[in-house]
Amino acid sequence: MKIVVLAGGTSTERDISIVTSYRVCESLRRNGHDANMLDVFLGLEDSKVADFFTEKNDLGELSDNLKDKTPGIAAEVERRDKARESFFGPNVIELCKEADIVFMGLHGSNGEDGKVQATFDLMGIRYTGTDYLSSAISMSKELAKKVLVPEGIPMPKGLTLHKGHKAEYVPFPCVVKPCCGGSSVGVSIAHNEKEFEAALADAFSYEDTVLVEEYIDGREFSVAVLDGKALPVIEIEPLEGFYDYKNKYKAGSTKETCPADIPDDVASQMQFWAEKCCQSAGVTTYARVDELLDRNGNIFCLEINTLPGMTDTSLIPQEAAAVGISYDELTQTIIDISLAKYN
Ligand SMILES: Nc1ncnc2c1ncn2[C@@H]1O[C@H](COP(=O)(O)OP(=O)(O)O)[C@@H](O)[C@H]1O
Ligand SMILES: [Mg+2]
Image 1 (cartoon, rainbow, N blue to C red):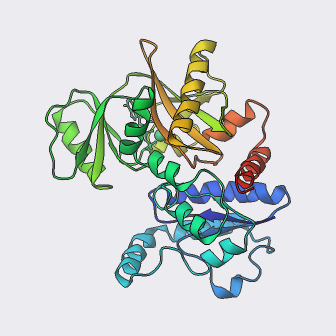
Image 2: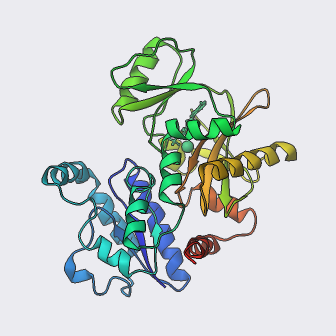
């Protein structure tokens, strides 16, 4: 099959997306596909379009190249906004239309939030992963709570703050996070008023809407859901601090155990909630639900990641491996489930 692995973009998780896409693209090539990586925002120059699917270019070199362009992205976003130019880079739509399917290697805004999915639906472009609406619901931690809590899903209590509005009363410790971010960018734990002010300033530097939640003291887990069925639970234990950006992506900074060392009934409950989160939000294909277990044995669901990372240190490949699904089988399964939705 001809496959575009859509990478990069303009979100705070641009660089992680490039790593995810690199790994996925290598895997798809090993599986015999004509796959290549394409930056959704930067696109491709005309002279390279004809050979895009057949050329076995060096993906490591391409990834480095795309990461080198990251510092210049913000200025280019501003320029295109002013000039009312498309978010999609040169030749992106053309190549995606030519592909049998687009593998969504994007993370974060303009990729995981449903906008690209909605655009592709209207253009007849096929893509991996869940649809635009479930993506949008899951991306907004505020909206996700409004959908999931009435379904009985346990989530930390909290409130939403809009820029310029003050919180009336906040019990400490609390967690402050941007409403639609990812990879823990802008997330902090505040123990007092001073830390809270700093946490708000940081979170508001990313977005105009911020969530303040009760801090759940306990253990952290994640549960992938593949085609509606939960995979084994993985436990995440950062050696220092919480599961922040550094601990997510710096190899060796976090201990991960899969299957998690917890009683079977607790694991089953976590898997139940992960599946229920996906059903309730309409999330199909594959996703990963972050969960916490407090000291009294209560489970809390934090969020649904609709385009979970597929890097070397990512969680979903480890969970798949625990049931004998190799990385290459996982990428193929994602393609197969995604294509089946179109039939
Ligand atoms: N209510 C909470 N209590 C304790 N820790 C939390 C809470 N919310 C978030 N965290 C910590 O912050 C991390 C990132 O939060 P999460 O809601 O998953 O957002 P992101 O989209 O950035 O991954 C979690 O993995 C967890 O370590
Ligand atoms: Mg998370």
